[in-house]
Image 1: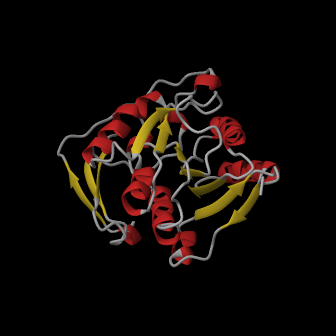
Image 2 (image 1 turned 60 degrees about the vertical axis):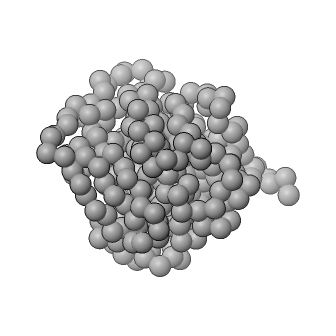
Length: 250
């Protein structure tokens, strides 16, 4: 994506493969045959600056061997950019959890470019755990970012905050059978004071059904006042602020 100033340093080898499809949705592993086709890249390392917003670039391994979460996608770049532009100085004292982190772009970008003083938990399924750990180590962010296993629709692991102040979710809308599990996870994580920044690329009509389901259960506000909003909307990328309908303690 042009807006996100990325330098690619790919290896010559091509990685392929995906986790097997599991008919038990409570432990959902996503089969590639059920996912809308998205542009694929070779395995390698990507250097990310987000148009210079990251003074010290991130180096991120991309590897699709364990599934499509192993690649960078436009929604993650947009959410990273938004957080760096709009929330660089107001995250001190806040607990942060990223859902469906894949290689961990958003959480790592926030750790690198925003002021934080609590661990950021990047979460995904078991196949992504090694990639998340590799990218944390590659960027020397092990004191600021922690990987955690979180299967949507199951109880959150004990190590992550029960109701974090900030939840980050990028490109989590792409596989229709997982929509109820994603929403269940949001219901469990979002407390009365939680704000979820939720970014997705609309690829199919079913994606809008997921957003409609979320709007029925939560307070949802579209975020459309930031520097490159119009350009992203033209690419069917949308950014929302999602909050519980419970009343805040304040």
